[in-house]
Amino acid sequence: MVEPGELHQGILHPAYADVPPIEVEFLDMPDYEFNSIGVRGLGEIGITGTAAAVANAVFHATGVRVRDLPITVEKLL
Image (cartoon, rainbow, N blue to C red; front, side):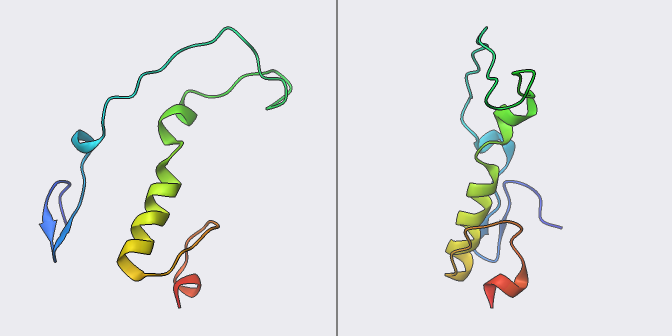
């Protein structure tokens, strides 16, 4: 297993320490277009760019751009 921050086969596997600080602002404004009670979960704040970052890393590693999830081997062939 490759540890975060370790170089493996010429690829640096980033760690949480490589992510810049994220500022979070809480707004007292419900978003009823999102759902009926107008709220979003706190987990959505930190996960927003993860899928795009993984898809971009897959593109750089394979040269195949995948634009929908899940990313599967079949989509890369």
